[in-house]
Length: 411
Image 1 (tube, rainbow, N blue to C red):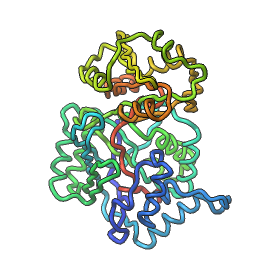
Image 2: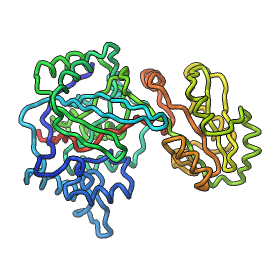
Image 3: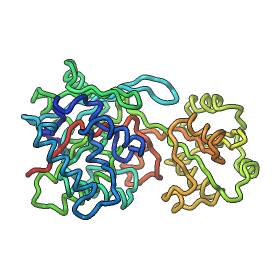
Protein backbone atom coordinates (compact mmCIF):
# COMPACT_ATOMS: atom_id res chain seq x y z
CA UNK A 1 0.00 0.00 0.00
CA UNK A 2 2.85 2.40 0.82
CA UNK A 3 4.91 3.21 -2.27
CA UNK A 4 8.49 4.04 -1.23
CA UNK A 5 11.23 5.22 -3.61
CA UNK A 6 14.96 6.04 -3.46
CA UNK A 7 15.87 9.55 -4.58
CA UNK A 8 18.70 11.95 -5.29
CA UNK A 9 18.34 14.78 -2.76
CA UNK A 10 20.28 18.00 -2.71
CA UNK A 11 22.48 18.11 0.39
CA UNK A 12 24.80 20.69 1.87
CA UNK A 13 28.36 20.32 0.57
CA UNK A 14 31.57 20.72 2.58
CA UNK A 15 31.81 24.18 1.02
CA UNK A 16 28.76 25.27 3.05
CA UNK A 17 30.43 24.68 6.41
CA UNK A 18 29.47 22.71 9.51
CA UNK A 19 26.05 21.07 9.30
CA UNK A 20 25.02 22.32 12.76
CA UNK A 21 25.22 25.89 11.39
CA UNK A 22 23.04 25.07 8.39
CA UNK A 23 20.06 22.92 9.38
CA UNK A 24 17.09 24.00 11.50
CA UNK A 25 14.16 22.80 13.52
CA UNK A 26 10.88 22.53 11.53
CA UNK A 27 9.65 25.92 10.33
CA UNK A 28 6.65 25.98 12.67
CA UNK A 29 8.86 25.40 15.72
CA UNK A 30 11.21 28.31 14.99
CA UNK A 31 10.66 31.25 17.36
CA UNK A 32 11.81 34.79 16.58
CA UNK A 33 14.85 34.27 18.82
CA UNK A 34 15.70 31.00 17.08
CA UNK A 35 15.32 32.64 13.68
CA UNK A 36 17.75 35.37 14.68
CA UNK A 37 20.26 32.82 15.96
CA UNK A 38 20.02 30.74 12.80
CA UNK A 39 20.57 33.82 10.65
CA UNK A 40 23.70 34.64 12.63
CA UNK A 41 25.20 31.16 12.27
CA UNK A 42 25.79 31.11 8.52
CA UNK A 43 24.79 32.91 5.31
CA UNK A 44 23.68 29.46 4.13
CA UNK A 45 21.46 28.55 7.05
CA UNK A 46 18.21 27.03 5.79
CA UNK A 47 16.10 29.48 7.78
CA UNK A 48 16.63 31.95 4.93
CA UNK A 49 14.47 29.65 2.82
CA UNK A 50 11.98 27.96 5.17
CA UNK A 51 11.28 31.03 7.35
CA UNK A 52 12.87 34.11 5.86
CA UNK A 53 12.77 37.62 7.28
CA UNK A 54 9.82 39.78 6.32
CA UNK A 55 10.56 43.39 5.40
CA UNK A 56 8.44 46.51 5.45
CA UNK A 57 9.48 47.07 1.82
CA UNK A 58 8.17 43.66 0.63
CA UNK A 59 6.32 43.69 -2.68
CA UNK A 60 4.83 41.10 -5.03
CA UNK A 61 8.24 40.87 -6.74
CA UNK A 62 10.47 40.99 -3.66
CA UNK A 63 9.28 39.10 -0.58
CA UNK A 64 10.12 36.15 1.66
CA UNK A 65 9.13 33.66 -1.04
CA UNK A 66 10.99 35.25 -3.95
CA UNK A 67 14.07 35.64 -1.76
CA UNK A 68 13.79 32.00 -0.69
CA UNK A 69 13.73 30.89 -4.33
CA UNK A 70 16.70 33.14 -5.15
CA UNK A 71 18.67 31.65 -2.23
CA UNK A 72 17.94 28.13 -3.37
CA UNK A 73 18.94 28.85 -6.97
CA UNK A 74 22.17 30.58 -5.89
CA UNK A 75 23.15 27.82 -3.46
CA UNK A 76 22.61 25.15 -6.11
CA UNK A 77 24.52 27.12 -8.73
CA UNK A 78 27.44 27.86 -6.40
CA UNK A 79 27.85 24.33 -5.05
CA UNK A 80 26.55 25.07 -1.55
CA UNK A 81 23.93 22.44 -2.25
CA UNK A 82 24.96 19.41 -4.32
CA UNK A 83 22.74 16.71 -5.72
CA UNK A 84 23.53 13.09 -4.87
CA UNK A 85 24.74 11.15 -7.90
CA UNK A 86 22.74 7.97 -7.31
CA UNK A 87 19.21 7.36 -5.97
CA UNK A 88 19.29 6.09 -2.39
CA UNK A 89 17.43 5.78 0.87
CA UNK A 90 18.90 7.31 4.04
CA UNK A 91 19.05 6.03 7.60
CA UNK A 92 18.33 8.78 10.13
CA UNK A 93 18.93 8.11 13.85
CA UNK A 94 18.27 10.50 16.74
CA UNK A 95 19.71 10.06 20.24
CA UNK A 96 18.05 12.16 22.94
CA UNK A 97 17.05 12.45 26.58
CA UNK A 98 13.35 12.33 27.40
CA UNK A 99 12.29 15.51 29.22
CA UNK A 100 10.82 14.92 32.69
CA UNK A 101 12.29 11.38 32.98
CA UNK A 102 15.94 11.86 31.99
CA UNK A 103 15.95 8.52 30.14
CA UNK A 104 18.34 8.33 27.16
CA UNK A 105 16.89 6.67 24.05
CA UNK A 106 17.44 6.42 20.30
CA UNK A 107 14.83 6.75 17.57
CA UNK A 108 15.46 5.04 14.24
CA UNK A 109 14.02 6.11 10.90
CA UNK A 110 14.76 6.17 7.21
CA UNK A 111 14.25 8.94 4.68
CA UNK A 112 12.76 8.20 1.25
CA UNK A 113 10.29 9.49 -1.27
CA UNK A 114 6.73 8.28 -0.99
CA UNK A 115 3.77 8.68 -3.30
CA UNK A 116 1.28 11.31 -2.19
CA UNK A 117 -2.03 9.62 -1.44
CA UNK A 118 -5.43 11.17 -0.83
CA UNK A 119 -6.79 10.25 2.60
CA UNK A 120 -9.72 8.55 0.86
CA UNK A 121 -7.34 5.94 -0.61
CA UNK A 122 -6.86 4.37 2.83
CA UNK A 123 -3.06 4.46 2.70
CA UNK A 124 -2.17 7.67 4.58
CA UNK A 125 -4.03 8.60 7.75
CA UNK A 126 -4.07 11.83 9.75
CA UNK A 127 -4.75 12.36 13.44
CA UNK A 128 -5.32 16.13 13.56
CA UNK A 129 -7.14 18.90 11.72
CA UNK A 130 -5.24 21.55 9.79
CA UNK A 131 -5.61 25.33 9.57
CA UNK A 132 -5.73 27.36 6.36
CA UNK A 133 -3.08 29.94 7.36
CA UNK A 134 -0.05 27.63 7.56
CA UNK A 135 -1.08 25.81 4.38
CA UNK A 136 -1.31 29.08 2.45
CA UNK A 137 2.19 30.04 3.62
CA UNK A 138 3.72 26.65 2.74
CA UNK A 139 1.96 26.66 -0.64
CA UNK A 140 3.56 29.98 -1.58
CA UNK A 141 6.98 28.67 -0.60
CA UNK A 142 6.44 25.49 -2.62
CA UNK A 143 5.17 27.42 -5.66
CA UNK A 144 8.26 29.64 -5.65
CA UNK A 145 10.94 27.05 -4.88
CA UNK A 146 9.51 23.79 -6.27
CA UNK A 147 11.25 21.99 -3.40
CA UNK A 148 10.55 20.15 -0.16
CA UNK A 149 13.09 21.04 2.54
CA UNK A 150 11.55 19.12 5.44
CA UNK A 151 10.47 15.51 5.85
CA UNK A 152 6.97 14.51 6.83
CA UNK A 153 7.21 12.48 10.06
CA UNK A 154 5.42 9.26 9.08
CA UNK A 155 4.64 6.19 11.18
CA UNK A 156 4.21 2.59 10.06
CA UNK A 157 3.56 -0.67 11.91
CA UNK A 158 6.29 -3.31 11.86
CA UNK A 159 5.97 -5.54 14.96
CA UNK A 160 8.96 -7.68 13.96
CA UNK A 161 11.27 -4.65 13.55
CA UNK A 162 12.37 -6.03 10.16
CA UNK A 163 13.14 -2.59 8.70
CA UNK A 164 14.99 -1.49 11.84
CA UNK A 165 17.29 -4.50 11.51
CA UNK A 166 18.23 -3.46 7.98
CA UNK A 167 18.85 0.08 9.17
CA UNK A 168 21.12 -1.19 11.94
CA UNK A 169 23.26 -2.99 9.35
CA UNK A 170 23.37 0.13 7.19
CA UNK A 171 24.56 2.30 10.09
CA UNK A 172 27.60 0.22 11.05
CA UNK A 173 29.94 2.70 9.35
CA UNK A 174 30.58 6.36 10.22
CA UNK A 175 27.61 8.67 9.50
CA UNK A 176 27.70 11.15 6.64
CA UNK A 177 26.26 13.87 8.89
CA UNK A 178 26.22 14.37 12.67
CA UNK A 179 24.44 17.33 14.27
CA UNK A 180 23.96 18.25 17.92
CA UNK A 181 20.85 20.43 18.08
CA UNK A 182 19.75 23.10 20.55
CA UNK A 183 17.84 20.51 22.61
CA UNK A 184 20.95 18.30 22.97
CA UNK A 185 19.57 15.69 20.58
CA UNK A 186 22.18 14.05 18.36
CA UNK A 187 21.09 13.56 14.74
CA UNK A 188 23.01 11.18 12.44
CA UNK A 189 22.44 10.47 8.76
CA UNK A 190 23.77 7.61 6.61
CA UNK A 191 23.34 6.97 2.91
CA UNK A 192 22.13 3.40 2.37
CA UNK A 193 24.49 2.45 -0.45
CA UNK A 194 23.47 -1.21 -0.68
CA UNK A 195 20.82 -1.30 -3.40
CA UNK A 196 19.60 -4.70 -2.18
CA UNK A 197 18.99 -3.29 1.30
CA UNK A 198 17.03 -0.41 -0.15
CA UNK A 199 14.97 -2.77 -2.31
CA UNK A 200 14.21 -4.94 0.72
CA UNK A 201 12.93 -1.92 2.64
CA UNK A 202 10.68 -1.03 -0.31
CA UNK A 203 9.37 -4.60 -0.30
CA UNK A 204 8.73 -4.62 3.45
CA UNK A 205 6.90 -1.28 3.28
CA UNK A 206 4.64 -2.28 0.40
CA UNK A 207 1.80 -3.56 2.62
CA UNK A 208 1.99 -0.79 5.24
CA UNK A 209 -0.53 1.86 6.11
CA UNK A 210 1.02 5.22 7.01
CA UNK A 211 0.07 7.58 9.83
CA UNK A 212 1.20 11.22 9.87
CA UNK A 213 2.85 12.00 13.20
CA UNK A 214 4.02 15.55 12.30
CA UNK A 215 3.61 17.52 9.10
CA UNK A 216 -0.15 17.50 8.39
CA UNK A 217 -0.06 21.05 6.96
CA UNK A 218 2.89 20.28 4.68
CA UNK A 219 1.36 17.00 3.53
CA UNK A 220 -1.94 18.62 2.58
CA UNK A 221 -0.06 21.47 0.89
CA UNK A 222 1.85 18.91 -1.19
CA UNK A 223 -1.43 17.24 -2.18
CA UNK A 224 -2.87 20.59 -3.30
CA UNK A 225 0.31 21.43 -5.22
CA UNK A 226 0.23 18.03 -6.94
CA UNK A 227 -3.37 18.67 -8.03
CA UNK A 228 -2.43 22.17 -9.19
CA UNK A 229 0.47 20.82 -11.30
CA UNK A 230 -0.66 17.54 -12.93
CA UNK A 231 2.12 17.70 -15.55
CA UNK A 232 4.89 17.95 -12.93
CA UNK A 233 5.81 14.31 -12.34
CA UNK A 234 7.98 14.95 -9.27
CA UNK A 235 5.08 16.66 -7.51
CA UNK A 236 3.38 13.28 -7.15
CA UNK A 237 5.87 12.37 -4.41
CA UNK A 238 7.45 14.00 -1.40
CA UNK A 239 10.20 13.24 1.06
CA UNK A 240 9.32 11.58 4.36
CA UNK A 241 11.02 10.09 7.39
CA UNK A 242 9.52 6.74 8.36
CA UNK A 243 9.47 5.54 11.98
CA UNK A 244 8.18 2.19 13.19
CA UNK A 245 5.43 2.80 15.73
CA UNK A 246 6.70 -0.28 17.62
CA UNK A 247 10.20 1.19 17.92
CA UNK A 248 11.34 1.61 21.55
CA UNK A 249 12.68 5.08 20.69
CA UNK A 250 9.32 6.54 19.65
CA UNK A 251 8.33 9.10 22.28
CA UNK A 252 5.27 11.31 22.61
CA UNK A 253 5.48 14.10 25.18
CA UNK A 254 2.55 15.66 26.95
CA UNK A 255 1.58 19.21 26.01
CA UNK A 256 0.30 20.97 29.11
CA UNK A 257 -2.24 23.79 29.12
CA UNK A 258 -1.46 27.04 30.97
CA UNK A 259 -4.31 29.58 31.25
CA UNK A 260 -4.20 33.35 31.74
CA UNK A 261 -6.60 36.31 31.89
CA UNK A 262 -9.69 34.36 32.89
CA UNK A 263 -12.34 36.93 33.75
CA UNK A 264 -13.91 36.28 37.15
CA UNK A 265 -11.90 33.13 37.75
CA UNK A 266 -12.04 31.92 41.38
CA UNK A 267 -9.49 29.11 41.88
CA UNK A 268 -10.97 27.91 45.17
CA UNK A 269 -14.45 27.67 43.66
CA UNK A 270 -13.10 25.87 40.59
CA UNK A 271 -11.17 23.30 42.64
CA UNK A 272 -14.25 22.66 44.77
CA UNK A 273 -16.21 21.86 41.59
CA UNK A 274 -13.49 19.63 40.20
CA UNK A 275 -12.78 17.76 43.39
CA UNK A 276 -9.99 15.21 43.07
CA UNK A 277 -7.13 14.20 45.31
CA UNK A 278 -5.01 16.88 46.97
CA UNK A 279 -1.31 16.77 46.11
CA UNK A 280 1.50 18.26 48.14
CA UNK A 281 4.06 18.76 45.37
CA UNK A 282 4.92 18.32 41.72
CA UNK A 283 7.00 15.31 42.75
CA UNK A 284 3.87 13.64 44.07
CA UNK A 285 2.17 14.19 40.70
CA UNK A 286 5.19 12.66 38.95
CA UNK A 287 4.96 9.62 41.20
CA UNK A 288 1.27 9.26 40.42
CA UNK A 289 1.90 9.49 36.66
CA UNK A 290 4.78 6.98 36.96
CA UNK A 291 2.29 4.33 38.10
CA UNK A 292 0.68 3.54 34.74
CA UNK A 293 -3.12 3.47 34.90
CA UNK A 294 -4.55 3.15 31.37
CA UNK A 295 -8.08 2.61 32.70
CA UNK A 296 -8.09 6.05 34.34
CA UNK A 297 -8.37 9.64 33.09
CA UNK A 298 -5.81 11.60 35.17
CA UNK A 299 -5.17 15.34 34.92
CA UNK A 300 -2.99 17.35 37.29
CA UNK A 301 -4.16 20.84 38.27
CA UNK A 302 -2.09 23.62 39.87
CA UNK A 303 -3.25 27.15 40.76
CA UNK A 304 -1.27 30.33 41.36
CA UNK A 305 -1.46 29.79 45.12
CA UNK A 306 0.32 26.47 44.67
CA UNK A 307 -2.65 24.27 45.51
CA UNK A 308 -2.54 21.05 43.49
CA UNK A 309 -5.11 18.40 42.67
CA UNK A 310 -5.23 15.19 40.68
CA UNK A 311 -8.52 14.99 38.79
CA UNK A 312 -9.21 11.30 38.26
CA UNK A 313 -12.05 9.15 36.95
CA UNK A 314 -12.62 5.94 35.02
CA UNK A 315 -11.84 6.05 31.31
CA UNK A 316 -14.65 5.22 28.90
CA UNK A 317 -13.72 3.14 25.81
CA UNK A 318 -11.70 5.24 23.36
CA UNK A 319 -11.71 8.30 25.62
CA UNK A 320 -8.69 10.64 25.58
CA UNK A 321 -7.39 12.70 28.51
CA UNK A 322 -6.96 15.77 26.33
CA UNK A 323 -10.52 15.53 24.99
CA UNK A 324 -11.90 15.26 28.52
CA UNK A 325 -9.83 18.29 29.51
CA UNK A 326 -11.16 20.38 26.63
CA UNK A 327 -14.78 19.31 26.84
CA UNK A 328 -15.39 18.87 30.57
CA UNK A 329 -12.93 21.18 32.31
CA UNK A 330 -12.08 23.96 29.85
CA UNK A 331 -15.44 24.02 28.09
CA UNK A 332 -17.87 22.73 30.68
CA UNK A 333 -16.46 24.37 33.81
CA UNK A 334 -14.48 27.38 32.55
CA UNK A 335 -16.66 28.23 29.54
CA UNK A 336 -13.75 28.33 27.07
CA UNK A 337 -15.19 27.71 23.60
CA UNK A 338 -13.69 25.52 20.87
CA UNK A 339 -13.11 28.68 18.83
CA UNK A 340 -11.14 30.24 21.70
CA UNK A 341 -9.06 27.07 21.93
CA UNK A 342 -8.32 27.13 18.18
CA UNK A 343 -7.30 30.78 18.38
CA UNK A 344 -5.24 30.08 21.53
CA UNK A 345 -7.11 32.71 23.56
CA UNK A 346 -6.19 32.37 27.22
CA UNK A 347 -4.25 29.16 26.50
CA UNK A 348 -0.52 28.60 26.24
CA UNK A 349 0.75 25.15 25.29
CA UNK A 350 3.82 24.15 27.28
CA UNK A 351 6.18 21.18 27.10
CA UNK A 352 7.51 19.90 30.45
CA UNK A 353 5.90 19.66 33.88
CA UNK A 354 8.42 22.01 35.49
CA UNK A 355 7.94 24.67 32.82
CA UNK A 356 4.14 24.59 33.11
CA UNK A 357 4.26 24.64 36.91
CA UNK A 358 6.63 27.62 37.00
CA UNK A 359 4.45 29.64 34.62
CA UNK A 360 1.65 29.46 37.20
CA UNK A 361 3.71 29.82 40.37
CA UNK A 362 6.11 32.46 39.05
CA UNK A 363 4.95 33.61 35.61
CA UNK A 364 1.58 35.16 36.40
CA UNK A 365 -0.69 32.49 34.90
CA UNK A 366 -3.80 31.54 36.87
CA UNK A 367 -4.00 27.78 36.44
CA UNK A 368 -2.29 24.92 34.62
CA UNK A 369 -3.59 21.54 33.58
CA UNK A 370 -0.87 18.90 33.55
CA UNK A 371 -1.38 15.91 31.28
CA UNK A 372 0.04 12.46 30.80
CA UNK A 373 1.41 11.79 27.31
CA UNK A 374 -0.96 10.42 24.70
CA UNK A 375 0.09 6.86 23.80
CA UNK A 376 0.95 5.77 20.28
CA UNK A 377 -1.84 3.18 20.49
CA UNK A 378 -4.36 5.94 21.21
CA UNK A 379 -3.11 7.94 18.23
CA UNK A 380 -3.31 4.88 15.97
CA UNK A 381 -6.79 3.92 17.19
CA UNK A 382 -8.15 7.41 16.50
CA UNK A 383 -6.43 7.83 13.12
CA UNK A 384 -7.16 4.39 11.66
CA UNK A 385 -10.81 4.72 12.68
CA UNK A 386 -11.02 7.94 10.65
CA UNK A 387 -11.10 10.30 13.62
CA UNK A 388 -9.01 13.31 14.60
CA UNK A 389 -7.64 14.43 17.95
CA UNK A 390 -7.95 17.83 19.65
CA UNK A 391 -5.34 20.48 18.90
CA UNK A 392 -1.92 19.88 20.49
CA UNK A 393 -2.76 16.33 21.55
CA UNK A 394 0.64 14.94 20.59
CA UNK A 395 4.22 16.16 20.75
CA UNK A 396 6.49 13.68 19.01
CA UNK A 397 9.96 14.34 20.38
CA UNK A 398 12.49 15.26 19.14
CA UNK A 399 11.52 16.91 15.88
CA UNK A 400 13.11 16.03 12.55
CA UNK A 401 15.76 18.49 11.41
CA UNK A 402 15.12 20.45 8.22
CA UNK A 403 17.70 20.58 5.44
CA UNK A 404 19.23 17.11 5.70
CA UNK A 405 17.82 15.93 2.37
CA UNK A 406 16.15 18.43 0.00
CA UNK A 407 13.84 17.17 -2.74
CA UNK A 408 13.72 19.41 -5.83
CA UNK A 409 10.74 19.02 -8.16
CA UNK A 410 12.49 19.15 -11.52
CA UNK A 411 10.59 16.86 -13.92
